Image 1 (cartoon, rainbow, N blue to C red):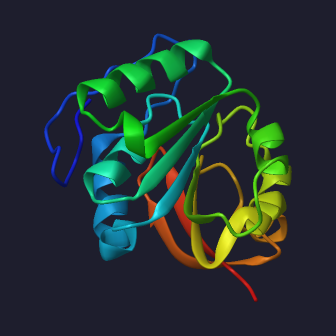
Image 2 (cartoon, rainbow, N blue to C red):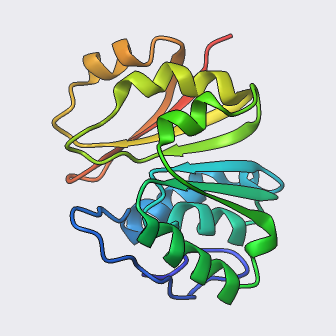
Image 3 (cartoon, rainbow, N blue to C red):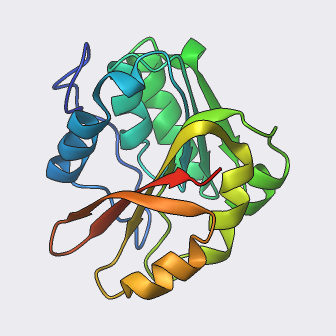
Length: 182
């Protein structure tokens, strides 16, 4: 898998060997990076359920100031670190091995411009959506990847304090770009 855009475009990332790892495909990441555009420049980004770290590393390639990667799998954190070191990006990254729930609980209010939330489809952790609101800046965006089987009404109920800015459909996956409601 390669970086989609920016200064490090075409670099191939190291992918962890984890059962049930769902890597966000190139076409989805490219659409997201194109949509986010200049918002990535100088942004503080959080990549929850980071997996391969592709969304966060794409963000760094497009000028994000700092990216925090959180995953419960040690192999994911190791592979993300290897990619960051190879790309000379380790100084702009923070790695956190552990639960995304605990990480959110311990984060400062209004800390992030952009949060990527790509939980495993078998356990979407919808209860975390309102908690993520607290750590987003007022003008921040939450990018949520979910299966097409999730009904939009259920998503809207779970996102009570967010509005849907954009909904992207890719057949096998959907992305909701959410903005906090003041």
